[in-house]
Amino acid sequence: MTVQLYDPTVDDLEERAASEAPRLSDLQGRSIGLLTNGKINADVLLRETARLFEERHGCRVTLMEDKGNASRPAPPEMLQRIAAADVDFMITAVGD
Image (cartoon, rainbow, N blue to C red; front, side, top):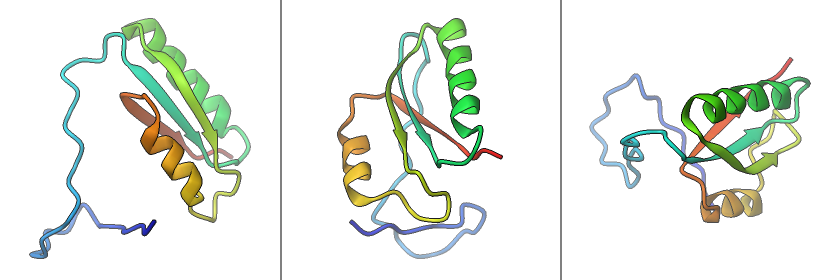
């Protein structure tokens, strides 16, 4: 799997093969995936953020992944699991 990064602040003229995900019409009852980078407190921040979505919108966490190393991309097999997961949206966080 190849990862391409784009600067969202630059209007480039290149046609991109990827597109933004469509916005959710509402958050009520949605499933959440969480991705932590392995740094201290990233999981705490994610769980607290998810708790607010659960309380305010009736969401539920259905996936939690920890890539374990903030300086490296997520492994391809992890990205495949995330892509195949039954989640409506993902939240990621950096700890410290």
